Amino acid sequence: MSDLSRQAGLLTLADFVRFSIKTLIGIALARILSPADLGTYRQLFLIYGTLSGILLLGFPQSLLYYIPKSDDPEKTKRLISRTLHVVSFLAVLCALIIFCSRSFIAHSFNNPDLQYLLIPYSIYPLLLFVTQMYSSILLGLKQPLKSATFSIFAISCDFVLVLGSALIFRDMRYIVAALIVSALLQWLWAEWGLRSLKAGWSLQNYAGFKEQLAYTIPLGLSLLVGVLSVQLDKLMISGFFKPEEFAVFSLGALELPLIGILINSVNAVLLPNMSSSSKADMAAIFSASVRKNSIIVFPLATVFFIFATEFMFVIYGAIYVSSALYFKVYLLILPLRVATYGLVFQALGKTKLVMLDSLIMLILNVILNYILIRTFGMVGAAIATVIVSWFIVLVYLFQMRYCMGLKLLDMFPLQSILTNLCAALLPVFVVVPVSGLIPNSFLRMTLGGTIYMLLYYGIARILRVIKPYDLELGRSIISGILKRGRK
Image (cartoon, rainbow, N blue to C red; front, side, top):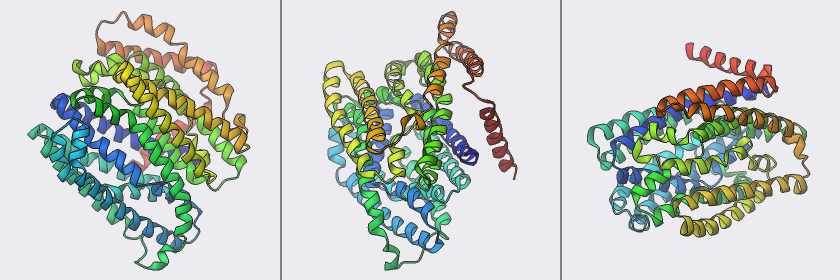
């Protein structure tokens, strides 16, 4: 388990660097571009994120499931090759959809500029689909360091090219061109890295493809529904409101990115190992990850909720302060993020159940989003997403307990979670009145946040939420990363 935690820690650090650079890009663009152009920029990624999530099906996740199970290098190469062939076809399909439906998308999003920008942007998926698979292949092969290195290279390309073009030209046409050049560089890196991992062309590569599809299609359909559920609020806001209003909503309508980094990194390491474990071992791995996740999730969620307005003001400027409302609402999802519940079903091969749950979530999300947007405006979309997220977790827990015969207390260390929740909430009673005495937003956020974290750490140690081996693990992760960096 210690080795798994170190791998997850490495990926978390790499994703943190990636997140930091991506945040700098977002901050700079928010201050360089007009709200309308910023809305357009974010809508481009909304389009790509939605279509790629739909068309990639569950192929990246299938590699995380099947590669660790393969004990034959040649069989692994055939698996990788056929998956890349299929994904390349899907990339072409994505490009054609973007190109051919550009007028419809521009009209639906109340944004005429999209019609012309989507012509060159249709090249983007042709390059990015393969690079997304490359990361999954490396993680399936249990090579997190290579995956982390590639992740940092990819975001660095975006930083230099996208931000550079924005600063020089302040024109969305040049920014789109920069995105494509960045994607090309990432594609070249991935192709070079894949050269020894692929088998030559042969029909033999497709032996076992039926079995892979049996796993991938139900999971892919569930991910399709999941992507639509996650993006639904933004898609509907784009349809109801103008690009500049979408820009305000989209900056706040996100979970705390640091939490997403942690969870995605942990999951990328857990799934390959849970897939080859017994139910008892799987429960132990899952439970340990939940406890560790909660140590990070609960205090970060709390401190950002307290200083949401200050955070938006300092990061994006006064024009986007109203984004804090949506940010606060979405933070209410974070307590659920101590675990990724669908991961258990994936590890046990129960992808049809994941698909059914995702379908339920999508239907509820559509209904609630429409009703609450019409009733409360943009904040209604955020409220709908939170309600559906809490409901679907209750469904997951019911299925884990009664349909799969798992003991929930073996997978969720309830006492540790509740104790940690108390440790995260107690500092609020000191921090809120003290920080209210500080007039400057930046100082209020930084000093108040520092006071909160010190108080949380002290309380967590007293209540034994943070254990000595957690601190030792953190030190070993940082030490290992620093040693690798010197080599």
